[in-house]
Length: 108
Image 1 (cartoon, rainbow, N blue to C red):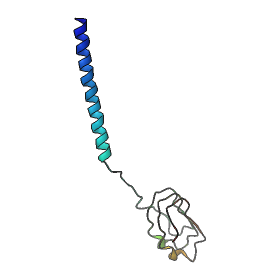
Image 2 (cartoon, helix red, strand yellow; image 1 turned 180 degrees about the horizontal axis):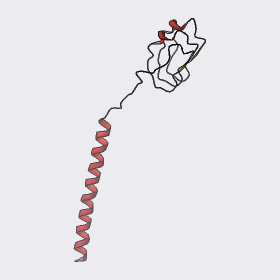
Image 3 (cartoon, helix red, strand yellow; image 1 turned 60 degrees about the vertical axis):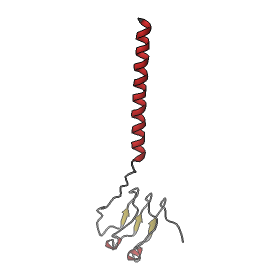
Image 4 (cartoon, rainbow, N blue to C red; image 1 turned 90 degrees about the vertical axis):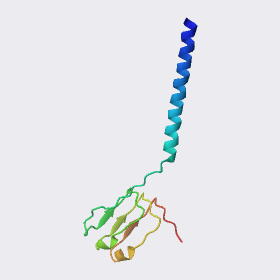
């Protein structure tokens, strides 16, 4: 009777292993089908009269609203995902320092 019990245990163990393997395979397939979700900060409150604006590590792809910063002298955009910089002409009279380190901006 001992051999029959061992055979039954092995059969149950094999079916449990198959079930776990099947569950893992299903979970892996589902994870592969999911697309990564991208987040981007939509709104950051900065006083209009700010002389220094630091937007480091916000994973921003674009910048909007620079025209509201009429007194900005230093603009730090380090460690973002910016590919191009536009709308800086509105800060031309006051901006003395622009930091774009570690972005995706390329020269033309």
